[in-house]
Length: 107
Image (cartoon, rainbow, N blue to C red; front, side, top):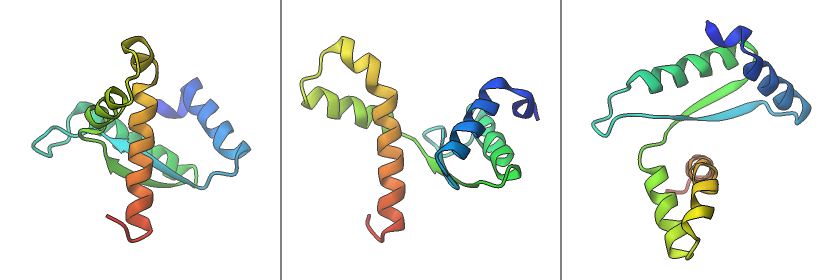
């Protein structure tokens, strides 16, 4: 797979090892009807490569996380300029939090 020789993939592996990470929650982009498109397949392939390296990977549906993060930031009266800088981070936080909630018997 393409990722195996990718410098970014190697950097990610270094970071995972450095921080002792064994489990990765990876956002899985899906179409609103639930179908997996090209971007979703890339995530699936990426997760498979991480698993080959010995990591436990959870693919997590990321539909509407950006919309939800945008709403959260708007309610917090965050400026448009600042929202653009943090929107992906906020969506990632929501993906991880929903995974953790599910693991702990929540939602």
